[in-house]
Length: 271
Image 1 (cartoon, rainbow, N blue to C red):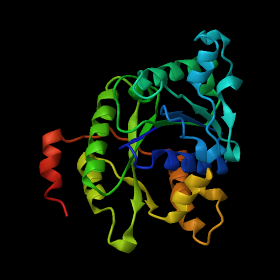
Image 2 (spheres, rainbow, N blue to C red):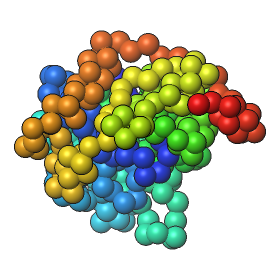
Image 3 (cartoon, rainbow, N blue to C red):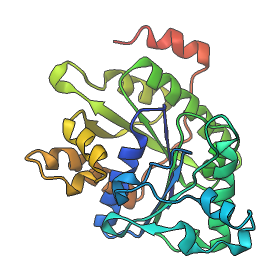
Image 4 (cartoon, rainbow, N blue to C red):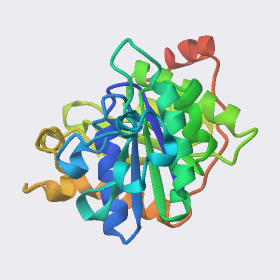
């Protein structure tokens, strides 16, 4: 199963992806997580370090693909999760999406798509053009991470457009929406996200709480499963349930997104 995880920039994709990969591995799945951001920090919670990237390996051999080996780009993190970072050019100097596309090709050349139970692409922001949309061409399912606010939902709707468009030529379906930073204790919730999910024909498949342990685990370069805290189980439970859902045949849909102008009008009437 190949998963492509998207969401608005800064929404917590990498932390969520790493903890989901850990949960899947702890349930016995052989997992590969691929970070698709030039910052190359997607897999930091799994390894505790910023690892060398695909672009680093290619640069070292003057971009002769045939000279790059699996061990040059694949490392092992927590719970045996294999990790790859695509990397990218320095800020303002090139196209990160191109690097993602090249990474996808390189992994195909290595034959890695047949060696894992789950491959998870953690993709930069809500950008779905060019190379950043390449994972959707290989994925069985897309997952969208969002918060209960307008900007996040607007981005989620745009991502639904991308999944809908790609599904006309590829097998990808939307497995659902992961609600992140859910803060019931301070009057927050998921009401807007639930209404959005119903509108586009999908559902919330996980609700990750707003909790300081998640922030601290990210700073420590660890997954939630490695942290010592009285409420650790509260934070890991959503990932364990989501892993079960994904490993037991998720129901995917082709979403029916709203137009950009329509979503402005519709969300204004939600409470």
